[in-house]
Length: 63
Image (cartoon, rainbow, N blue to C red):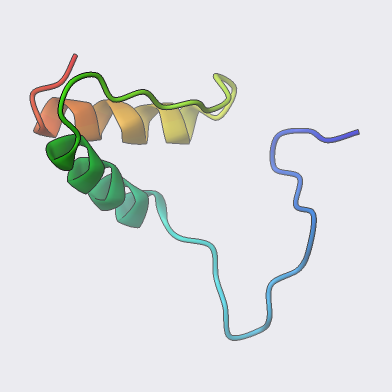
């Protein structure tokens, strides 16, 4: 069973998952570079990610 927060592997000790702040910058770049509708699929249970997408959308004038 996979649940929110599950990981299918381990990172090396010198690696880390990106922060929500770093991901927001990625989303901002993608939203600015994408003509037309930009879609994001993520779990509604991951409130941090939903907020990150919302903040990126707001920064780029997207709905």
